[in-house]
Image (cartoon, rainbow over the protein chains, first blue to last red):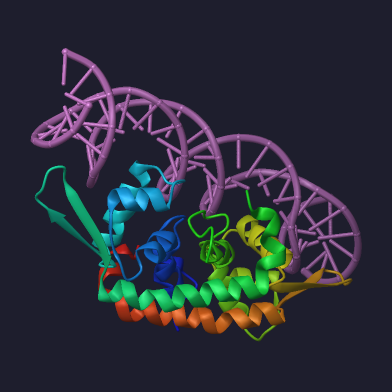
Length: 113
Length: 113
DNA sequence: AATAGTGGTTACTTTTAGGTTACTAGTATT
DNA sequence: AATACTAGTAACCTAAAAGTAACCACTATT
């Protein structure tokens, strides 16, 4: 693999830029196979602000990992779902989680806020 | 999985905190099966400054992903190698790279600097 | 008439990651 | 006597990510 020394061309770093944020893996995992509304996501992830949630959802949509369906009702209803690409990421997220649980559980306990 | 809504307790986010930086996956991948000196790493990854390289290596060492061997010679010689844990991460990095190449190649072309 | 619920936006501030440049100690070389 | 080599460190700076708090339109409910 060439150019791997440059983050902008490193495929791992590029993948990270999609799932590496503070909230993206959590959001993707929360949605899972379901269709969730904005408010529901906000409930499930109470520590995220609606501004950040809004941003992350927009980015995930632009990247083609989630789809946004707006129903013209009142009060408004918007549902978010994983796309096929988004779904294909879930097993990888679980592998990452497993690796972390196996190899870093002790090291990272003190990181927990 | 409980508490996944809080990044500090989310196993994916915790794993990300290890491999999610701009340089860590590149460094891990460069070392691979070899034992590399500081200067050699700096050559292989010319875009990283020695301050940042030094920091990253320290963090990777603290996390138990690489080992640092100092030879008391003059001029000094220090060699970095992946630990068993570090080596176990390599296949995961490749999976991430493959996923990105398959699913994001087009989306991310414009991100390349 | 006021309040609540929905899915956000706006403006501003703080935090964190990463970058730049210069510098160090000790010896060997020219 | 000056310079080079190694593996860094120190002080400072910048840009991006994330957080905070207030606000919006529209309708339904009390």
